[in-house]
Length: 587
Image 1 (cartoon, rainbow, N blue to C red):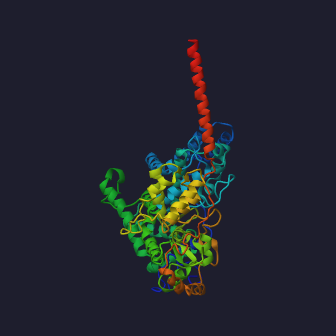
Image 2 (image 1 turned 45 degrees about the horizontal axis):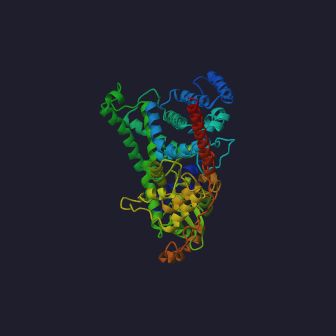
């Protein structure tokens, strides 16, 4: 089985060091079809009992499809999510405040209607970016690049449609949701609810681990017992529904370090998570200690274990970031012109010689949106930030979310949103802010971006096409940011051009053969000859395209509509003046 199983080489140990080890490049590659989360007691818009849930949904759908005003709809939405969160949920008032504070800068900068509300597409965008910013979680079905229409929320992959389709149909897809939109608190509730669904799914997986290890959930375990539980949990978490792979790996504990990449570091990480619980008991005994579970009695309940695995979900990306940094450094080292691109010939040449991670096939790179084929000088090139954000580089892949490398562009866009605070901005103000942002590839690299004449001209053209203002959340501005920060910000493809398929979903051919690599690598010497040329001479912005795509479907106020408002205001003021004069005359 081990030799016949085909895995891509993202997260595998270097085969040159251990040629007999299993080649685990990316855990999602092992997942052909994951079972949906078994949410224990939680369902959005459903109260704890099944009988009351059915009547609640009928009343909710009837209410939302009536002609009630927007305030009634907003209250219904909050009541639905609030009831779900109240069914034994772990997201309390403090967490809700934290979510709101975290989302506020983004909310301030996005396009809203005249009532301060957003549409469905923008809500999805907010949710997606929140989880990516906080924990590098890629929530499936919420990707901004995924095409969406007015008749569907997302896809069967998104956690809401899969777990609570009645809620999606009855609340999110209601007539009032489309006509009146969502406000800030609705977005906060949405994020909190998805957090709750993820938290509940962790509980189900943890229960499964307890069952496999024949440990009663009502009985506390020792420090060593907790370590055993967490080791098994991480294996189940990474391999998802690959039952055969889980059994084989857990049966070969002595060879775990050869099977799972950086297993020794993962064990240190898990050990630290458990010791953190003991530290909290020592520092705040009234809050974290109870009889038999204190700093002097290192025993752990199921609730303790659940709290630890919840922290793993939210912190694993930060732990794994060093691996992402090593991979990115290797790519940057091949980018001699600072274009954010690596010739495919060098990509494969390095894969053959020293860097075993780079093994995606040309077809799979194209499907991921990580391939630039527009250069007449370099030919096909791998786009560094697109490649780093590709699902093939995500370390954990479940049915509904992936744990991926951090998106360096989020910090950049977040700083722009904080400083500008509105969706449409003049080009000169953007240049002022962006000119003071550092790319910070490393501690020693903090130079501001080089905003040359061509980049300034491109931004002016974007503004010219939008009545003098640049939409911060449009494809053209994202494209401009990519060329300003080519190694940090992904190139934004047009909707439907790139996919987010895992290797298993892509199917056979996701990994390049040795012959394919050698064929491309043969041209590596030719691309080296171009290293002495300037990037402007190489037409490095050849992938630029003029098509705009905005995330929101909301209409924007045009200059003509603003003129109408001004005229109406003048007429009203004139009429008020005439009425006042007539009244004074009569007096």
